[in-house]
Image (cartoon, rainbow, N blue to C red; front, top):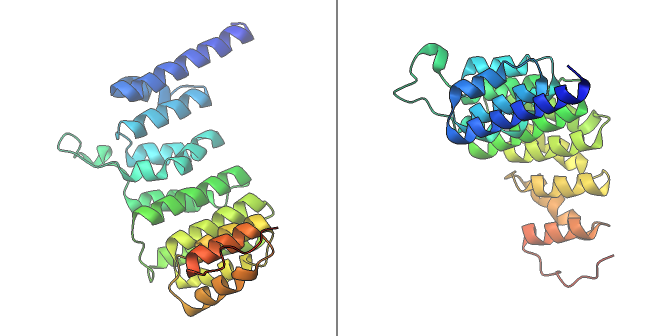
Length: 240
């Protein structure tokens, strides 16, 4: 097969997988999920998530896929994956959907990925899960997750990863993540903008003090967010 024909065939299979997700055609979605081409597998994965037919075994398979594209889809769709519920027609063990712990464990494993795009996406997914579910603050798994996110927010070489980790820490709101978010308030403007919003997730005097200090931040967007969060009356302050 010529290269152009192969590309056309791949595109057609991706379209069929996408359609399968909209018409509840699980067999077609699963055929795509087993396709030799990664983009088709990713489309099959998304179709299964859309139909709420993703199983724990499917999640594990996507996380172990040789292509980073499938791991990206897991991070991007973490909230939708959590919406999957078992039904009377899917009670067998091999048909059970992934639970919150399964999704978080998968996302946590992605935080160690060498690809910064995967790390950023994993942080985003963790934030989505934390926003949808109440994570146990004293739970060892949550504490380990917060510790990893703190390390990324402080030390990761990619600025987008640091920003996404700070946002995830704010969504979790664990006391163990507060110092890392406050430290991010000393970073570049984009990081400070993420951090000031993240501070709202913490019910602590140190978070309130950091928000008040941000009222005089050099960046007007940080100041505006701080004003909104603090209920400050300095909204007419000149913006630079």
